[in-house]
Length: 186
Image (cartoon, rainbow, N blue to C red):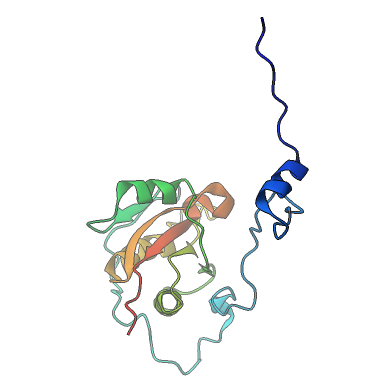
């Protein structure tokens, strides 16, 4: 004798089990839109370079330690960062909360913008941010200077725990996911 097949429960069965205060969802997709009205989501590079703010990139070296290739994938982790967390970052499973685009900036402006962005992101308690540095691949024979400098600068910042090259949807080897330390509450 064949086993009796059971029919899956209907929505009415579930609502009867859960009670009257449960309302079924109207859609089955997560809201992936970025926050709006958040100062970190605006483009920092649009701010005037003559802005009279203290220099946030002052502690970052202006000497390039190593030159990286346009298509080279970058990865860095401070001691103690779990391999599983690093893998999640590489796979793009750790959502980023704010982004900074360095395209078109000078090295000095990029250093200051990066320092300010990381400081502000940490103050906002952001855990993961996106840094778009570009790859200089559309310019024949040019090395990706901003990518190389970003690689060096992020390693110098004490608030940066790790970074990896982004997934293609977020810029690929022209961008980085950056994991930040949690700021201590006073």
